[in-house]
Every structure is written in C-alpha cells, then in structure tokens.
Image 1 (cartoon, helix red, strand yellow):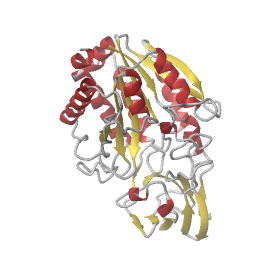
Image 2 (tube, rainbow, N blue to C red):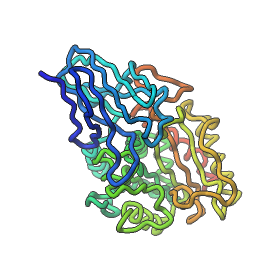
Image 3 (cartoon, helix red, strand yellow):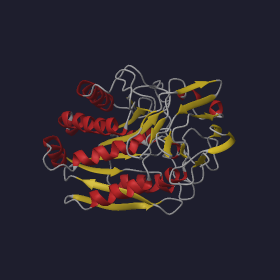
Amino acid sequence: MSITISSAFDSGNIRVVKQDGAAIDLEIVADHMSDFYQWFHFRLAGAAGQEVTLRITNCAGSAYPHGWPDYKARVSHDREEWVLAENTSYADGVLTIRLTPSSDVVWLAYFAPYSMERHHDLVSSFAQIEGVGYRSLGKSLDGQDIDCLTIGEGPLTAWIYARQHPGESMAEWFMEGALEKLADPDDPVARALRKAVTFHLVPNMNPDGSKRGHLRTNAVGVNLNREWHAPSAEKSPEVLCVRNAMDAQAPDFAMDIHGDEAIPANFLAGFEGIPSLTERQTRLFKLFSDTLERLCPDFQTAQGYEVPAPGQANMSMSTTQLAERYGCLSMTLEMPFKDNFDMPDPLYGWSPERSKYLAHHCLGALHAILSDLKA
C-alpha cells in the first residue's frame, strides 16, 4: 500500500506539495477569502512501521510564526487519545514531523480537534438533561445553528462562549468541561452557581470555520472577534445573533474562550482601555484573576498580552465591547497550543482534559467572587 495524505473531512486542512516515498512536503491552506492560516488536520495512511518525514513548508508565512518554535504536533491512532509528536522541530520556516506509525492509519493535527459531530453530540446530550434549556440563536452563513445551552435560575446572568476562532479547538473542550460541571447534580459548587446565576453557554460561535478547517475566520473570511462593534447579517451573522441575545439578557459576567499560538501559558485578557472603565470593573477583574490563580496551578498572571492605554481599547473585540456595552465583568481566556511550560506534560502537552479541568476551576473562581459580583 502506498502512503497517502488526506484532509477531505470535518476540520481537515493540508495540501500535498511533493512526495518522495515516505518523505512528504505539505502546505497549510489559508482560510477561505482570507490570508490567515496555521491550523492543520490530516490523515496519514499506509505507513505502518515506516519512518515518515512530514515537512510543512509554508510556516513562515502563517498567521503566528512565533507559535512554531517549541511547538509539537498532536498525533492520534484512534482520534480519541492525542499525544505529542515528540520528534517535531522547526527551522527556517519549515515544521518537520518525524514519526513511525504503529498502524496504517494515523491522524495529525495542530491541536486535538473538536469535530462538528462531537459538537452535535455535546449539544444533544446536554439538551436532554433536566434543567438545561436549548435554543438556536440564529444561523451561520453556511446555515448551521448557533447553539446555546442555558443552565441555572439565578438572578445574575453569565455568558460563556467559544471558538470565535475555529482553529482554537481547546476552547470547545473547555466548554465541554464547563457544561459537565454545571450540569452535575451532586457538585456543591455547581449547585450554588445554578442557584445564583443563569448561564448561557455557546460552545461554538463559528461552526462554518470549524467544519472548513479554518484557523481564524468564518465562511467569508471574516474574523468574528473584530465584528462586535458593528456585526452584520451579510458578514458576521454569528456575532449579530449572539449580541442580540445578550442585549435581551445582559451579562453580569462574560467569558470568551480562546487559544494562543505563541505564549506557553494560560492567561486572561481584559478590557482596561475601554472609554467608560469603572473602578468596580477593574476590581472585579483583578479579584477573579487572583482567585483563579490561587485555585488553579495551571493558571498564571505573569505572562499575557500588553495592556492598552486608557481609551485605546479595540472596541471591535467581544471582551471590550461587552464591558463597555453592559458595564459587566468581561474577559478573554487564552490557553496554549504548545503547553503550559510552568507545568509541562511530556506526553500530552496542553490537552483536552486539562482544558476541561481549567473550566472547572474558572467556575470555582466565579463561585468564590459571587458576593462581590452581586454587590
């Protein structure tokens, strides 16, 4: 059997440039109608017991070239367990992955994928649970539903939403963890949260980009997290329908879940540069961040994005727009593609399981600051 590469499946992305037996040169395909690219996901078949050299040759021109040094690809033989491809290296704009598959079918990806099929299973399974409500907030450009699950009956309102950038698949693993904790009838933190807060969870805001294998954009190449100031039905209906729902049920707490290509740590980004910044918002953000750092060894505050100067926030992003629009506590959570270098895992790196546990800790931190949020 000859060695083959394929990516014609949900969230697949790669192009074969040249093949000489077990040495294969590849390129990542840019998002449709966009220059963004970094996400890859493909299947290697017919190479059991052979050493294969895969070279992704266009990494230097990717969206975040600083994401490649110290990065290791993910590999799976069963699409359930994803481990680090230990023999991954980066030099001169080329990512090289060397491996000897133990079976004739093996999968490689930028991070453990979260397929649309798993998304539908997630939504269906939680929609059946007593106390969990479901609604479609609207349709994507490709006609897919923007699914929303509601849990809790409290007077406070929380919105947690993920995968504006579809290639950041750890974000939906986080959402799975959040749903599992919130729906647990025996978890005392979840019981207290459900009594105090009504949660609206949008596990995937960009189903079109997810299915198409995009890194950062929707079906027409639009970065959804630059549309919150003026979303449109023509370019960003995904944001428009979610923001309309938020207008009807304004958040007291909002968390936008992402992944960062370059920084090997978990961190929060806030809203410091918004025009109407209040002392209360600043105090609550620091309180939540400090509480999460105390509760979760996988979270830190030393590394993160540069804080904008007063009045210089990018108001097209959800975190800043929501903080300004509703006066709420709003934040972006970033998780690493590489690993948390403060607590590295040599087998899995940053993983779906760790993403889910981080969700548990974030909800624990929210519970810990409820009295301050209510004040």
